[in-house]
Image 1 (spheres, helix red, strand yellow):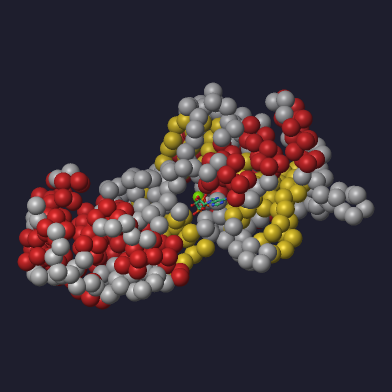
Image 2 (cartoon, rainbow, N blue to C red):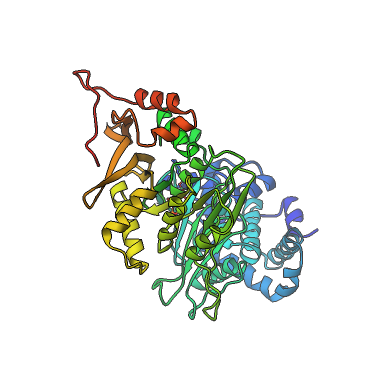
Length: 494
Ligand SMILES: Nc1ncnc2c1ncn2[C@@H]1O[C@H](COP(=O)(O)OP(=O)(O)OP(=O)(O)O)[C@@H](O)[C@H]1O
Ligand SMILES: [Mg+2]
């Protein structure tokens, strides 16, 4: 009834600055944003480039937006608005904004007006300038470093976006809106906060004065369509034989540690490795922020809890893992092992809950062992090093190493067995490794997953018990690479 519709009938328009072509680095950004969809709905269907061009707004656009926004805030009662359903609130804002645009004699094209409306609705009701990024499925991480700089990770590469916030106060406001959904607060007195978006995305906020240049917001986008081992094969993260090997390892109840650096794909891999678990097993998952999407019917999901504002009520990962043991679990899956819960997980692995899994932060299987060791030592368990190592050897069967390589691709670089102890040293044996053979013209790393000539892994007996030896032998044999003399290329013990 207001401006939007009457403007469609053809009011005079002055077009805000629209760069002729989108900047190269930003073109990808326009693919699936909500703004893009709405623009398309309102005007002639735009090509991706012009939409992006509009998103990289001029100063003039931001001035108009501030004027309209301030007028809107003066006009509406935000508390009343909050009581409305999201769709109704959006409609209400749209009508008022359209009216303001007419009253203030701002002349803009329908497409611009649509975008302004969308922007303002997002600011008032949603996550402001973050909305278009949140709507995209191809983004892995969103990293906001203060109001002026927002980066995203797409296809393993980090790139800067043209998204910006009006100022740090607006950014702080949005951070506050995000964390208040999980009943938390972020401000000077409690400047660090973890939260989760309604869609499952993991959020961390660190605010000034700890973050010096304005609030830093990090979002790990939740993938609705979880990746499967088949897809990892398609991406080249693992070979078909490697996939079979991982499936067998998961199925025959090996205790598994997935090791990797930040964002290397540990959680994804853990999820994939859980797929072959039989549907009649009782699985209990413990996570800081529930990310795993297990497909089995019999799953209990547990999540840690940070302390409340008074510093009370914290439930740690260790509390969860310990409690898990009283819940008759058949498998325990710990999202990320980062502290003394390593001890409890190893004990669980050692005491009949074989087939348990966890991820941890390390850059190689060897480092994963020492990380576990130091986590146990720092947990205050007064055990001699040798005993801790024996405990690790007695519990963990397989370490799967995930890495993000320098070209942005994510690979499984090692499938390694924990074999035993030689004196005080834990012995490891690689079953399969990713070997880099070169780089193609586009800078993409070329390599191959190859087995190391081990015909009978240590978990052979388990494989026998589950009737998987033929598949196991075939997978290992098919991944062998021979040198020019016809000998299998082996692997030094790790
Ligand atoms: N093999 C892969 N190929 C392509 N993308 C992948 C692969 N594995 C994971 N990803 C994507 O990379 C992102 C990070 O993955 P994931 O959350 O599993 O990493 P992580 O190691 O658990 O990270 P963190 O250390 O932050 O917990 C996700 O968006 C995920 O979809
Ligand atoms: Mg993770």
